[in-house]
Image (cartoon, rainbow, N blue to C red):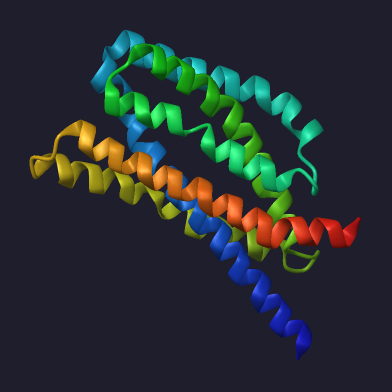
Length: 193
């Protein structure tokens, strides 16, 4: 009975982690969609190419730094890396778009590597597949962000106001990852050390 209760508790924690990721990507997915709209095909496409080039390169080294003891910081700092990119769409500042492309590229590698470590920490051999599926299911609902943006803009809301609102959602995700890491992951990592 106790093992079942503990398993249910860990599953709820995975849902909480998925909700933080959901909020992060509710903000990022529309921002990425709007890069070429706001900055034009040349600049917008170049920024997205830079973002994924940095993400690719960062993925080669992120696993060297992200471990159980650094996972909480990886989640928080990784999510924070998305903030400048979302702010660039709100402000229309080209320099901020390229700063954001780099910070998302580095942040995404830290975030996704940390997510893998966190879900693994909240799993065992028999629950790992279910926990990753649960995380993915909750996290992937993030495409609702595009719907919210579309309806807001259709209703006459200014683009800057919509994306500053998404910036706030992204900031909420960063805070959620910070609290999750502090309350859930750090004690678990210390208990295993």
